[in-house]
Length: 117
Length: 115
Image (cartoon, rainbow over all chains, first blue to last red):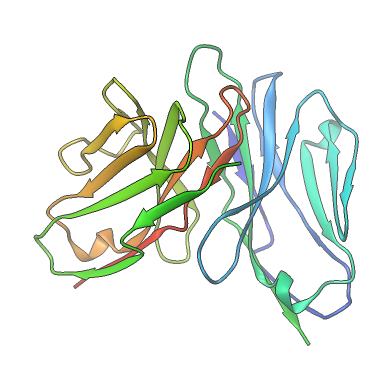
């Protein structure tokens, strides 16, 4: 069975600090997908990134960067120069690619990030 | 991506009643999903709703409690039946906009409070 662990529950930083959100996953499949979603106070889940298991290249998008390491089963998310608008709950999720069957997302418990001015 | 809307956005209901939540997508999609997010918790998949077939429920969720309809490729409903305070949650629908892409896009959610 697949599992996603986000050991950090709450993180509080001051604006402009860098912050890293950790995600560790478990799966028996060789083909899988990893995701990060942001849930601001409004409640909507916003898709941030998808990574497949064959692509270990790190990715940078503006102030956001992701570090995928299969050797440690981790997919960490770093926000550089954090801003108040980054305050939200961040979920890491895993999907096992199942041929001929529906994809199923397994979510971690989420990390509440508070960025103080 | 896809633009997804849900109705109602929030509701307060009495125990023992039922509420039907609607999910509308701006494009045709094969797969739609319904999730529950209990207060302060993560998301749990309730069921997968594919057009033209019965919904597939996850362990712990049953059709009598959460009947789902999927009449076409852009619309689905989830009913929360015979509600109790434990059903107070955010209910979210999601879609896989591109078949096989594995990426799910979520609606804004329906916040339900059961008294």
